[in-house]
Length: 139
Image 1 (cartoon, helix red, strand yellow):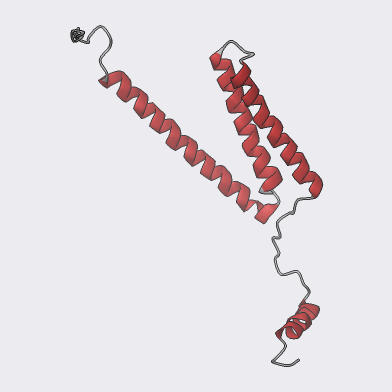
Image 2: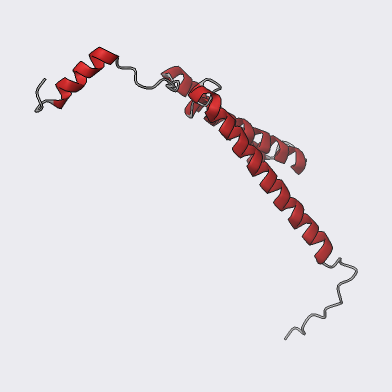
């Protein structure tokens, strides 16, 4: 092996020790899994779009609940089919750290909404307490 040909030296090194260097190799997607993820993503995008644009459901609350459910399912589809996050990836640590991050974000968002709600209810005057404000004369 000569010093002028590092490729040859690298090839000999792989032949002695094997080409597999990463003991925690992440799973790779296939064309079929990417296609399945893409189709699911399109469907999960089309459902909320149709619900909002054509209003087949009269209740805004039900529509919002369905849109949020589609959003959560879409997040899972992206994590599984495109980011390849599974209990097998990285020995399970990737999934565990993602769950921990989600828990922290939910706690932060829920706490923020709780604080804003209570600030609004405790500091904003109700309609009965507001003084009558006269409108300026029209000219």
